[in-house]
Image 1 (spheres, rainbow, N blue to C red):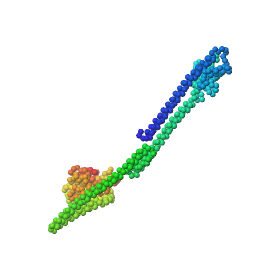
Image 2: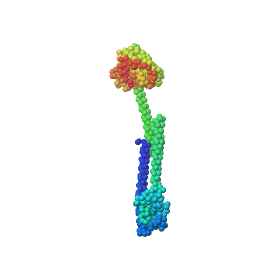
Image 3: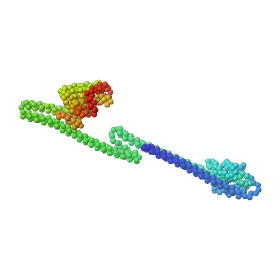
Image 4: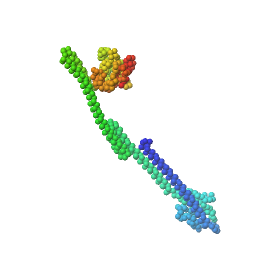
Length: 511
């Protein structure tokens, strides 16, 4: 029950239960009040009937002569006098004398409209005569409760019955009860309407805030949007906090962008400084060597001069190669991919390096898959593979071996080309910076070959990494290129390599 709607529903249920409980209580109170009024009325009409009987005994005391007739005007006048003596004119209790066969002989008040219905009086008188004792009964007369007491008057007139009655008007109490029920129902409906309006209003505001956040996120501008106020005080406090956080976040983002630009500028300056230092070092050494050779040539004979000029030309060639590699790093590398058969490509590249390997006493081994076509720029990838092969041949001692393998990972949709050797491997102090410019493990190296190779592979959307191998078993470089998603063919060689070649290729873990 964490939502506002559920909590308001609980409030509504509690309000409805409270209203129902109050209605039940009011009904019980009304019933108890009506019962108390009836009991009070029964006591009073019974007492009034006794008073009529006492007054009749006073009138009947010492009666001599024949019994009066029921239609005798004098007798009826005497009965009215008895009633007037027994009953108070201002008392709401009515009274009278009833004689079976003749009906009502006398009553107080005289108006019949103020008296109970004759059927109620007849039933009470008949019940008293049948049971031969006083009775108190209830009846309904025009929606009102009428309490009637009947008592037998002994004397010269047989079967003469006195009665007293009181009308309990139910209209006033019932109308108040109905008014109370109507008020309760109105309160429940008002609470229901208010809670419904409150839930709908808050839901609409929350949807507006959610739409603003989702729309701003979908626009890709980042950050938090400025949300308009809703007019709800509590909700506007949250919106104010959100807008304040958005302002601070924007300021922090601008500051972070500025700091990132400064860091990037610093990194570029640092890289430029390292490149400048490397270039200066690489150029300074050949210049110093050429200067020394030239000074020796000036002080020597023709043979020394010819030897010095040859050495100077060699240094010039080294400088030219350095400048070419520097220009290669600055040139734009936009690959022009084309479908290339991977096996044919690897075999052609190895044929170009067979003479250099033979001269160094190094054996080349190839594990090339058949029927696999990969989209890449053969000139750029060939340059990378040539650099890796040249480095492997130089690092491999006489009688050593260099292994080249191509494999396709169908699930990853990648092609891996590995070049491994059984030379001394890469020195631990160089491994972390191996692909940075001017970082090399050879005294005659420029340190630009691997940096350029990685840039060329990255331009194809691939990676070039030095993968882990057992200590002392040489180096292994793995080039990973994206392959076509479909059209994979049978991968012979990759699935079942030869024993010696399999040991070398499987030892190159992908980076």
